[in-house]
Length: 309
Image (cartoon, rainbow, N blue to C red; front, side, top):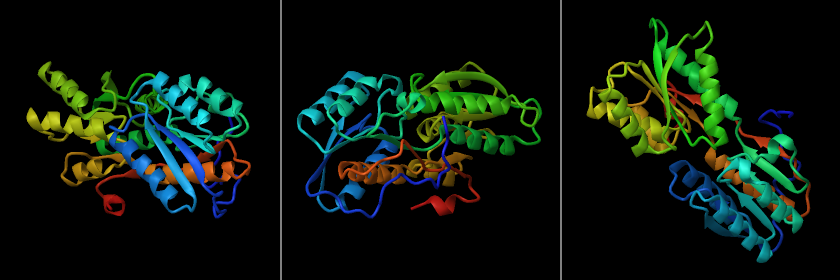
């Protein structure tokens, strides 16, 4: 699949006015995820400043069947466009079929659908960030922080196995740690489901078992924060490198407090805003390209001030 550079624009006029009374259905994976809250706030903010746009927002609560039902209800209600933050990217075929079968534009955001690899149907699009970049940037920053240590060891905290981002971020870290430039032994990797408490419990169990490691590489900031809390409650952080992804407000606060060393900024607000622009344009009959990429950016204590809001 052709990968477009971050500056590639969707084939639409971002300044185009919304149709009168444009109604957009939005189905989110979960309202409880801090990163997805930022994404949803971006969606809402863009809709509020776009004349004539109203949102119908639903929480899929991590349930694939519930999300499909929400999309089917959007179709039955005759919305002008649909935005979906997919619960499971491998289970989006029915969602895509429901929207395209009704002739309703569909924009996926943040969680890529399976159709992104096989070919997005006309009237659909995806707004997100290249997950390969997230993993590579995180790994590169960890390698830099571990420079000079012999026989470095790391553990990995993963998101859900069915989640595309979790899979790709982990794979990129594994590939980086297998290179001669950054030989790091991965001594353990487990799923903590993007969750702070689960990550804290997992790292605590590793510490109790006497597992030795120099770095904790988490697929997101929430799990990195949980790892930091586990260390604080046991041996202390010491010189263990802790890395996350997303550069959330909590993640940056943890970095400022010395609890995290690395994160990677994912512009959730920008993704949400772009998803609404694409949905509005598609509802107005404009052609939307299949992909729009918003770049990841590495964040360390040296440059974190630029990401604090």
